[in-house]
Length: 104
Image (cartoon, rainbow, N blue to C red):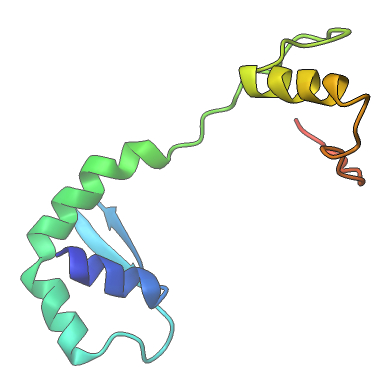
């Protein structure tokens, strides 16, 4: 079944379980008779698999951090900062550019 799932993923075939039945969406001409026969052969396994993992794809919002003057650094960030201070303010870890993030 893993080979079939990989083949379907690479062919941009989307499978969902709706009301205990497989709902297959694929580009025109992708589902050949061989692939269709494989899907029929593994139908029960596919339904079990997608039903089991359906809840994992639900969206869960990440809570917004409270506004602060500064935020704690990770160990990696702290090491990079210390290294840059030891080298006399090296620009080695500077990456010029800006990204504006907008959220809800």
